[in-house]
Length: 211
Image (cartoon, rainbow, N blue to C red; front, side, top):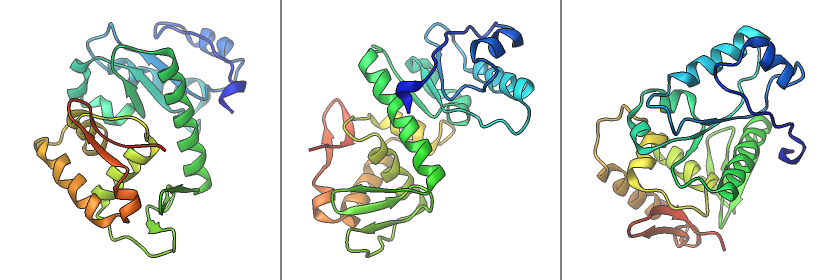
C-alpha cells in the first residue's frame, strides 16, 4: 500500500552507499523524479543503471513518475523510462493521485486483474476488452492502448500532444489528428454507456468522466 511507503529524497548525484542506506538495503518501490530544472531526461537512464548496479540484473524496476516541462515531451527517453508524468503547476494532491494510480496499475498487471468501468471489462494483463455481458470488443492494438491509458487515468483530461507522447511514443511522425480519429473509432465501438463518459473538452483534451 502506498500509505506504508518509506519516503526518502535523493539526488541523482548520490553515491551507491547513500542509495542503499536511504532505502535500508531494499530497492525502492517507486521513483518520483523532479526534472523541472533539467533540459534532458538522460538522468533517468542513470537512475535505472544505478538500480541494476546496486541490486543486480534481477531487481524489479520501480514505476517512474516524472515532474516535467513541455520541452521534455519530444525526448526519446520519455516513453522508455517514464511511466507517468506531470506538467506544471505541480499540485501535491495530483502527485499523490498519480502515485496511487501507478501502484494500482502495477498491482493489476502483476495479478492480471480486470478493470471494470461503465459497461466494459478491460484485462490489464491479457490486453482484451469485453462488455459487462462478456461480449468481446474488437479493438486494434492502438485502440486498446488508448482506451487503457484513458481508463487508468480517468477523471483527468489530456491534450492531444500528451496522449500522442504517452500512447504512440515521442518518435511518432503522425499529427495530432490521429488522436481525434482513434477517439472517434473508440466511441463507435464502445457500449453507449461507456462512450457517453468519454468526453472532449475544448482547451483541456480527452478523458473519461468519473461519476
